[in-house]
Image (tube, rainbow, N blue to C red; front, top):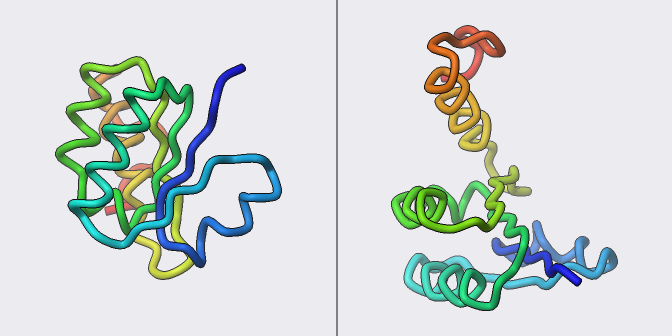
Length: 108
């Protein structure tokens, strides 16, 4: 059976415990990088990272997306919305088809 992990601030991720998701609460960059590398090595199929943490470890996330088969998704945090997940989706669509067909200029 595949495992699913969620990493982020405790307030945002605590509700997912009811779904059987493995939770990894953190607010620190160094700790987040360490957790992320452990999750990849532990062969988690899907890893969800809150925007707050993803902004801190964005370089590591980009490296993993190029070198690993893990599905890594950025989700909004309970705190401040940065729309990082949408920005990445927009960039990937532009890269794949050459134009922004979804968002136009709504998400900057």
